[in-house]
Amino acid sequence: MDATRFVASQWGRVVSTPGPASYAAFVPGPLPQEVQLTTETVLKLSEAAAALGRLAGAGRLLPNPHLLVSAYTTREAVSSSRIEGTQASVTEVFDAVVTGETKRDDTREVINYITALNHGVKRLQVDDFPICLRLIREMHGILLRGVRGQDKTPGEFRVSQNWIDSPDNRPATARFVPPPVEEMGRALDDWEKYLHEKHPRLPLLIRSALLHYQFETIHPFLDGNGRLGRLFIVLYLMDRGRLPAPLLYLSGYFDQRKSDYYDRLQYVRERGEIKEWLIFFLDGVAVQAADAVDRAEQLSDLRENYRARLRGTWGRAREVVDLLFANPILTVRYVQQQLGLSQPGANNLLRRLTEQRIVQEVGTGPGVRHRWFSDEILKVLDPDRQS
Image (cartoon, rainbow, N blue to C red; front, side, top):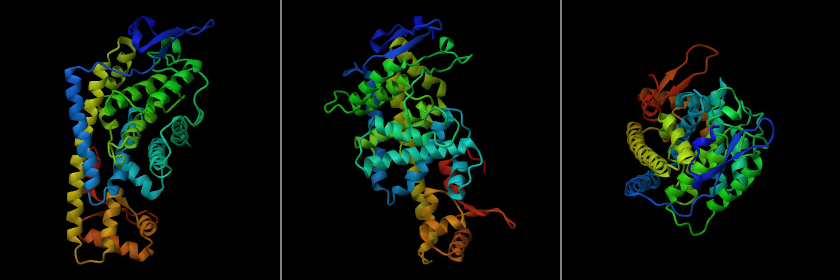
C-alpha cells in the first residue's frame, strides 16, 4: 500500500507493521459526530429521504407487502454477490429455491446471503435483538456456510492481516490494507458504540453511509466483508424504523457502478473526499428506492390482473398466484409443501393457471422436473433475463 497517498489525517492514519516484511496499513479514526454538509449534499439527502419514505409507504400500503420481501431480497442478494464476482442470476436463484438444487457455488453463495439477511431480520423483529457485533458474526457464519471461503473462519473476526486488490497477493503491493488485528478490535468497538448512540447529531442516511464506509475500512473478516457491509445497510434502516421490511436493494446501484463504488470508499481514506462518498451513497438510495416503488406498482397491477382472471374459480388458485410473487418459478412439490395440498390438487391448480396464461410449463418427459414460471413477473424482477 502506498502510504504517500493517504493525506487525509482526519479519517485515519497509516502505520507500519514491524518485522523484515514490513508493510503499511491504514487505521481509521473514530467516525465524526458532525459532518459539514454542502448545499448539494443536503439536496441529495432530501431526495434520498423522500424516495425512501415513498418506498416505506408503498411497503405498508400494498395488500400483501410480505409477498415482495422474498423477491426483493433475492434481487439484493444477487447484486451484492455479483459485486464480489459471482455470476448467478435472479432467475437461477428462484429456480434453486423452489427445486432445492444448487448447481454451482455462485448460487449457493446468493442463497446464503438471503438466509443471512432473513436471520438478521428475524433477530430484529422477532427476537428483539439489537444490531451488534454478535449479530454481525452470526450472519457472517451463515454467509460463508458450505461455500468457497468457508475455510476463512466463518462467524469469527480475523486474527491475521488481510488486504484488498494486490497484483501478487501481498499487502505491500495492495491498494488498501485494513488495520492490523490489535487496531481492528479497537475500531470495531468504536463502530458499535457509534451505531448505538442515543442522541446522534447526524441524519440517519448520513450515518448509514458513514457506518458502511467504516465497516468496509475495518474489514474485520477474512472474507465476506463487502456483502455483510451492504447487508447491514438495509438492516440498519429497518432497525431505525425507516423501512418496514428489506425492500431496498441498494447493491444494484453499487454493482452497476462497481469501480466508482470502490473508488469513493478509497478516496475518503486517502483524500478525505467524504462529500463525494455521501453524494454517491445518497444517489444510490434515491435511485434504488424509486426503482423498488416502480416495480412494486407493476407487481401489484399484475397480481390484481391475475386474480381477476381467476375470479369465480377455486380460491386456492389465488393462493398459488401469491406464491408466484414470492418466487416466480414453481413446482408441484413446492406448491404441495407451501399450501398443504395433495400432488393431484397442486398439479390441477398449476394447470388452471396455465390455462389462464398466468404461468408457462417447462420440462417434458419422464424423469424431468417440471416447472411452471411467470414470464411477466420474472421480467419485472430480472430485467436481464433472456426470455
